[in-house]
Length: 149
Image (tube, rainbow, N blue to C red; front, side, top):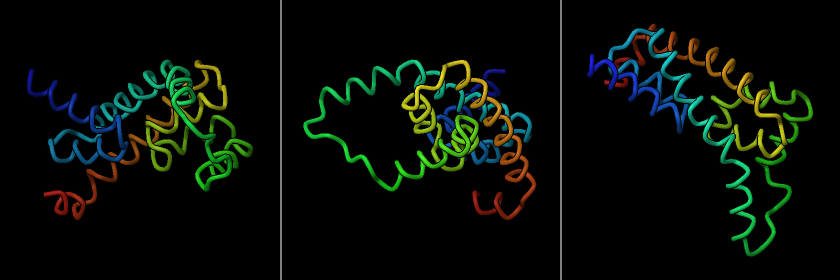
């Protein structure tokens, strides 16, 4: 029981920083693809929860300590603004696992002043969809398993 919980925790923690780390950890730890998907989604949602509630405070802290104004038009900013204009929170949420990472996606949503309920709903839907898809692929493609070992 304890080792199973530690496996779940490892997969969830791997997904808090980089979403693809969870499915890889699930394959290495020999979890089923459903277990891996759910733990990956939980890990991403932990990051979303923490950063949604701390995002405003982090933004204020950075603004206080910043000596010069930030660059307004960086390549990343332009991509994020274009996605926001075309798709809103749905686009940001569904591109968070593969493109923005679980760290940058919620911060981006907070920066666009999306309501917290909307952030949690769309990010959890995205985490489940991506978790199921990536975990299934990682568990069924044997060359990935050989590469990991």
